[in-house]
Length: 384
Image (cartoon, rainbow, N blue to C red):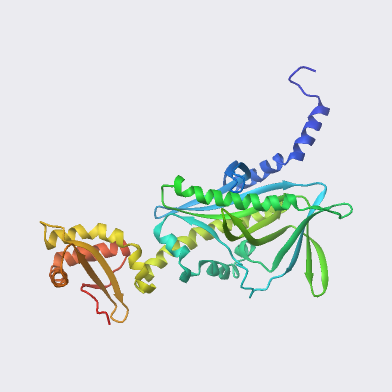
């Protein structure tokens, strides 16, 4: 043979060995995702927080949608594994929905948008609970978020005699996706300049046999499965959180891909709707949290104008304080001045209230920043 030509026998041997590595599996998964309009990053490196070394995650896939100049990303962090000799076996029990020690619906989000961060992080919003409730009535979402069994252990078993091998490959598929997720989230603050929201989901795609061994009052019941969700606490970067890793057999990924597509479609509706919800409820958030969130933007929009109409020679008006009275359905706009006495501030409020142009400008600014079109007054609210 010539130096650059392989014999048929050599080609078959080469293909046989390459298929054992798992790289062909990664390529097939990438092609399926790309056919469904997911963008792909192969072999993404992240920094292991424990050892301080570069590690590799097999695939990061994402879709993006823009609404009102905010980019909404749905991101899949994917580990690919293959085994011809061993089955992956998951030991499960029924979930106790009332267990206070389990966070049943961890949702991994990151955003640099002020309103979205508020909606995601404010405990009163119950975003994760709301998503879990919505998933109960939407099968594609239930596939992602719903859980009726809890994995409490896992093990690789020899496919011939079912002897335990170890849990190393299963554990590695879990911990690499979790660490890659946290690395990606932590790097976004430095990398992302545009307004965005990222939603992360952890997948382990396995080319091989999967078994569930379920324990209940009737004993242990084994069955072959093609997907299962693992949920547990893990400590990354010295912080403890719950993570969900969705295991799927490669052979079923083609039928499951539509659920992942639907997940993104859900995100493009649900998260932008949080913006509308914020503006609708600005007056009613406890402790005036809604007004305080955007006060910097409001002051930047209006404060210099108020100073111009009140006294163009000096910038006496320094800060604005918004306080909504639900009973009166009235927004009070209070001021703090530089070196102004209490009586001077009260006098300034009265003068601003008498200026029709100031009221027009203020109304416009409230609509621009807060989308608020209700009644307002320049006044100091009663402390009682």
